[in-house]
Length: 298
Image (cartoon, rainbow, N blue to C red; front, side):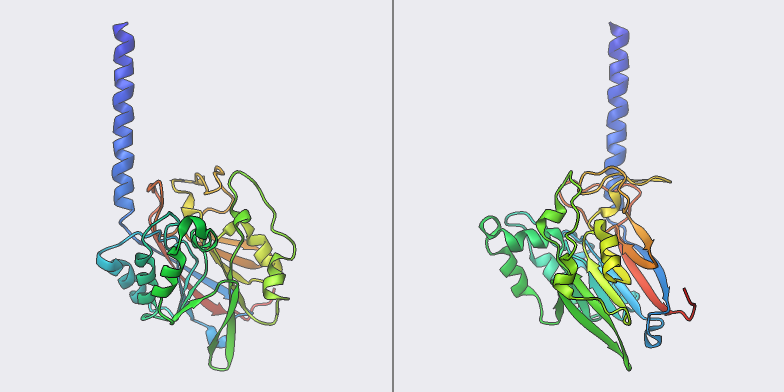
């Protein structure tokens, strides 16, 4: 009996030590921002956009890095972006949650470079279910400067010299974020919103949910920026992210650069968390993408 108690006590002590270790590591990681850089080479990128720098932010979830998020903003400034793209979930879709933190960050980003903002599932939630969230969405929008380019199922054209590239902000419906189910995107979901893709031009999608990357690519998106998965929360070497918001273990798309049919997706691990503020081997992330015109043929 005493032996059993001793073993149980030892196991409890080990569990507490592991739990404390996880809490300490997660606390440290949640306050360190990592810069991840990619170069995208594509012959479809106009020559005028060779060397064009895009900074990507996502999933802030009201997290703060320094007073008024100055640490975050300073890191973005130091990257000297030509444009900034933000793929949603900057706030938290919880009743009476703060919307000012996200609005202030977006406003400050416009002072660094032209900023384009598309919806995540948290913005989608508070903009759709007004009976639950009241005036949160209106309050958020009213705090945004006019310089924040809202791409809610909209297209923007970014020009440089005599050339341009296209940005499309994709707003998915709430059904496509359903947990524990694999739901296909309707065949005409994207064409109804954006028409037929012009393959002669370079098209970039801002799409919060990476799960539908192949659908974005099939429509014609040459490059997709996404978030949502938080890098899998806990990352295990050689195995990747452990769990997705859909509660899938080891999701196909967790974090990094992905390719399909010569189209690319840059999936950020995001900046913050909600509900469970855990990050292990998964630092908050700012992504820098440099576009390169390539003369190589397919």
